[in-house]
Image 1 (cartoon, rainbow, N blue to C red):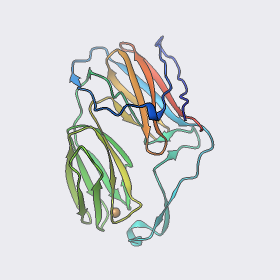
Image 2: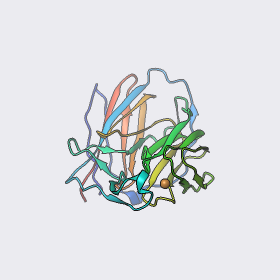
Image 3: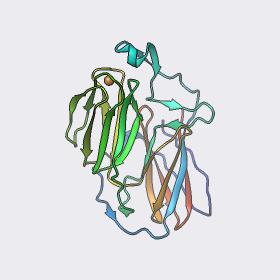
Length: 247
Ligand SMILES: [Cu+2]
């Protein structure tokens, strides 16, 4: 899984992507990020797509609290590919090495437990953001954070209850419900505000990016990480299309 496809050019912007293997990726700490006034920033738009036959969705076996959770099976959201355009949903695209730019958005975000699934399946947020962890069901759920850098927790949450947790350190945090083993989600905590989660068509957008050349990467829980580069012109729009190619 090495190849990374390119990419369109728009507005005279030069854009290139490089290949990188997962093994070669350094796992260093997030660099220091400085907030500055961004004048005439650019935009990065693009898609994350899958190449090859769309795999059948993994089915989750529902065997508990069936009155609320439903009977039988539900499709896992660990890999959601749109068969119409091959877009990959819930991939996180980010500029992890950017040194300065727009302010961090730390408005609270929400992760719900609804119908015995986490909603949404992936939430990306700036470090320092509070997460409203909701239970919209009328049964007990649990919130188990598999965090290492942020304080871990493993707490029950009663029917229609909620709790608030703050994540101060960049980290990828898997969240599970230990009552219902099929339930999982990811909170992706970032050290700068330049990230986006792809939509159901695999599309993403980042705005107010200072002109410059940046490393850009995408992560998806089943497909892994891919790296590229992007050059953003002042006031311009750069297009980056990631493709998870067949092995
Ligand atoms: Cu649960």
